[in-house]
Length: 373
Image (cartoon, rainbow, N blue to C red; front, side, top):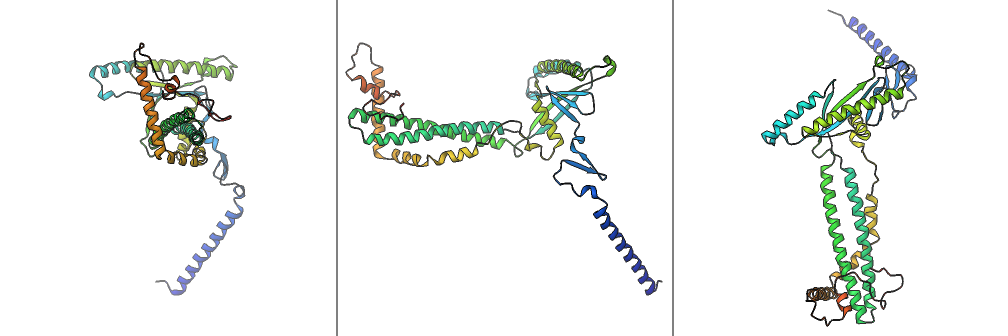
């Protein structure tokens, strides 16, 4: 059994070892890693074993051009086709049998190893959504202009000096109100499309399944004369892969498989997602600008005109104008249906005003610089 004095000496030795070890570790961290002291955490580099390597060393893609991926450090060139099939299992027995037979033809086109890749990615409808937002902005601008025109002609209505001028202004106001209603319905429809496609786009929606056949061609120096140039090698790769892709697409088409060759952007997106598994969805495969600011600020300048328009439409005066315009339109339609041998006793100008046609108000009430229709 150890004595108290012996146990005390053992604990002292352990304490001295811990102190010396801790001091050595601190000295190493402070002076032994000088190479890493000046590196920023945002540098696009990777540190391993005390050495720093560029991230590009870990990505084997040298370039993507003409629908071909050239691997870094290898004389290997890669192309791929993106496939979309049909509902095979719900088809008729005859269709299933014909598809299977045609697919055997595709298998016979495979003369060297290929890769079949099946993966999924979030469906990105951002470009289409922004296109709808752009169209919506155009409809908003159109409706806002008509708001201002409506308010302008409502003011002119009060200054009309003759019955013809009064009825002419009423006709213009009526047509403007109908056009505003059309724009409003278009904007509501676009809002529903934007909301629907926003729900379908991104990680929260069902992923889009992608199926690809990936083929390659590798340069063999024994098949070429000495001194062959890089351009000649690349030209041979392009021709060989083009022939393979066309042959496979033709065979797949007979098997009811719709396919298309991946473009440079699609190949870039495919590789980007592979080497950026966490941030791959942040990359958008399109060129576009954000129009949200315009959608918001474009309404501010016309809010006053819109409020005045809505107030006018609720007034009794407006209801009377609408009733008169509808009566004139009905009368015009009745006159157009009369036989040719029946004389029209009405004045031509009255028919034009109530016909629903877009006509200019008479010179008596058109001011210089005003908007005409």
